[in-house]
Amino acid sequence: MPQGTIRTFDVADRTATLLTDALVEHPVDREAVAASGLMELRIGQRVRFELDGERVTQLNIVSL
Image (cartoon, rainbow, N blue to C red; front, top):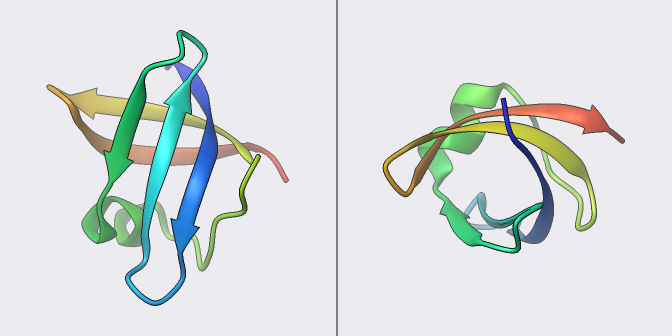
């Protein structure tokens, strides 16, 4: 599973932006955040993720 860093997180919309280690940015929609079971994400937080095309479908925390 590739890793990246949370670049932005909108608490109200529960959406985020993820920056991969290859410096590619991917939007994270509210469905992916909800499916992860996470209550919130923090900017700079390291995560593992899965993609379906350009869409992030799974998030797991690597570090808090």
